[in-house]
Every structure is written in structure tokens, then in C-alpha cells.
Length: 253
Ligand SMILES: C[S@@+](CC[C@H](N)C(=O)[O-])C[C@H]1O[C@@H](n2cnc3c(N)ncnc32)[C@H](O)[C@@H]1O
Image (cartoon, rainbow, N blue to C red):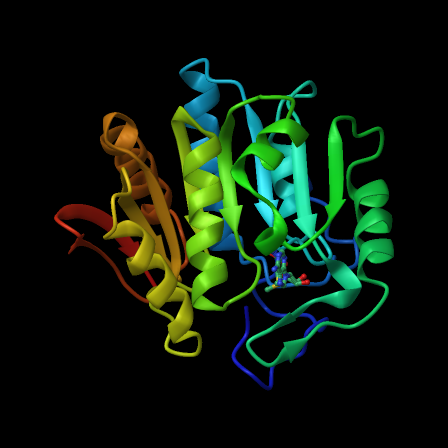
């Protein structure tokens, strides 16, 4: 998410691309905040999961116009479910009020970028109002292999989003949290630490341009290595291994 002052719909130099779309520069932007580094990181983890035979749902809290969801839909298997959760027109987060008509833009972007898409469910709701059992029911009890938390920046919303993610995650799944340690949104880190330091079994494996990667301990090392390889190929100012919450993680910025 941008610091204040950056357009909510405007183009950025780092808008999302994903391998199947990278060759097609004629497509207009989707609109949103997906960065190519974030998409590369998530897709590398998704590829590893598929390589290991893991199947499951992909969930995004805070979808906006789909600049991250669409690459995630592109890298899911046809029969895997993608669930997008966003209140759309009624959304307000830490002083940011989102414009109207976003769901329509998302639907149009999905139709344009993922024609013939199947198994994509759009849930117009605030994640704050969704309990873990309600989310599981909406997923038809599928476990989640990739969960992106990118909705409200309020600390309690971030904490609840991570709770929803951890409650529905497959054993080999992974969670991504946006704006972790971004000084523009300190409440995101506040909510994340509140969750991670209070009984969570999630541990970190990567932090790329403020996108934090988390998983359960048994899958951590494999995701760390996949992330490190992906980070090595990214356009970044700096990359290194750093320590977070007792774990070595792959950092890129
Ligand atoms: C930064 S944007 C998401 C960007 C998007 N993931 C992307 O990659 O382009 C934040 C989104 O979170 C949504 N949002 C705000 N509060 C929310 C909540 N409580 N639950 C779910 N989504 C929320 C907003 O409507 C907005 O679309």
C-alpha cells in the first residue's frame, strides 16, 4: 500500500506482472499496489508447494482491483479455489477511504486477465466481521495453501487477519502480510507482533519490500530457500539474510 500521497489507482513503475502476463505489455494496468517483487516471491512459494504436491485454496484479504489476486489466480491450478475478501465500497482503513466501484473494476480485470477463470469467489465483507469457522465454511472446509493479508491496516484487523490465516492454513501453507515494518503503517507491525508473540505457531521465512512471509515450522526452511532464490533474481537495492523472531529470513528491499 502506498504512503499517503500516492495515487490509489495510478500506475506505478513496479506494477504487477506474472510470468504468463509478462510478455503482454499491451495490457493496461490492473490498478492497485501489487509489486513485481511481491508477485515473484508469492509465485516462487506457490511453485514450491505445487512441486511438493500441495493443493489448497488461495485467499486474499484486501483485494482492491486485483493486482495481486490476478497473478495468484494465474498461478493456481484450475480446480483450486481462490477467495477474495474485501468490503469494497464501504472500506475505510487508518484514515484511507476507498473509492466506489472497485468490485466492478475487479470483476472486469479478472474477466480481461483471466478469461475462462473458474473457482474464483469474491466475498464482499470486512474480514473483521468474519470468524474462523465462517471462513472455513465459505471455503467448504478446504485448507488454505497461500493466504495474503492486505486489508485494513488497523492493528486489531491485522491481528485478526493473521488469526484467520493461521486457523485455516494447510500444514505446508504460507501467509504473506503486507506493509510489515513499513514506517508509513506502524499499526501493521503492532498487529503482527501482537499475533506472532502470543501463542502463534507461524514463523517468518522472508521479508521483501515489506511483505512478510510466514509458515509453520516444518515448511519454513523450504520456503526460506525458495524465497532466497527468488530474491536473488529480483531487481532490488539490497538483499541479505537477517534475523527475525529467532529465524534467519531472506530480506530484499
Ligand atoms: C492496499 S489495498 C489492497 C491492495 C491489493 N491487495 C493489491 O495488491 O493491489 C487495501 C484493500 O483492503 C480493503 N479493506 C479495508 N478494510 C478491510 C477489511 N476490514 N477487510 C477486508 N478488506 C479490507 C480495502 O477495501 C482495499 O481494497
